[in-house]
Length: 348
Image (cartoon, rainbow, N blue to C red; front, side, top):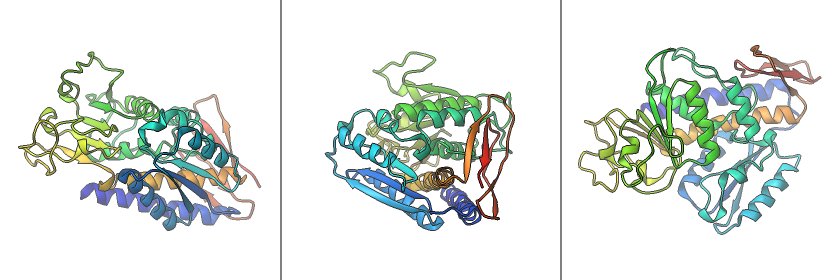
């Protein structure tokens, strides 16, 4: 309940900020976002529904393009490329998880034009975000990027900070975070950000000790937090996780149902264990609402950029810039800015 309240409060803060930016910057057209939903996966549907609610609350136009579960990867490629060239569309969201037959999710995500990438997972946006990220303290949480931010990274950062997993100061003990079963682009962005934030990060491909695939419990035994994306039952089992561990289920697999003391070895069970104090977070616990709000923030910035209200100029130096945006009219508004190597210039 505490996390749900935190997520809602943060989402409301972002929505207010987005609405003020849209009103003050005098955009010619409200941001228009297209969400691509393939099949009927309940998790994907939950994320899309929260995006629709966030869009409605902020005056952003969101359209859901529902595609059959048997849609091929080539059909998805054609759809993405068509939306890239559509000037009336400011943002594209390819909602994960996709059906297995669609192949490499990362390859499809990288087809999205960087300026329309509402998840911030296109390589150019991830690199810019990581350049902006600096080690932060508990009293100074990571601000949103001045352009497009990886929504899932910022959402995980917010959750981990709320549970005090991330270091509160520099030179503090480094917590161990395990990443399991995430799409490659999500794993890469999270891994690099968490390392910057002061964590020791273990993945299935980058692990201090080679993983024994016959003993998956050894993967998570020492983790302070686990981020799970794979949709496989028993990916993480209750007896394997130590007390106090935080589990974030971004793919909403059944593997991360809250544990109980008498849970069988093949699953976590369906009731939280008070004694073991394992905190589990999924899309139904406010995570998807948080991600939806960040996506809408990205949509607002993308629309400002594509309508010529602002431009981005890369800087090879390390100076921080907090910019004020001015619309073609006389109104002014403040952008959500961070310690950045990008400059925002103003047209008009």
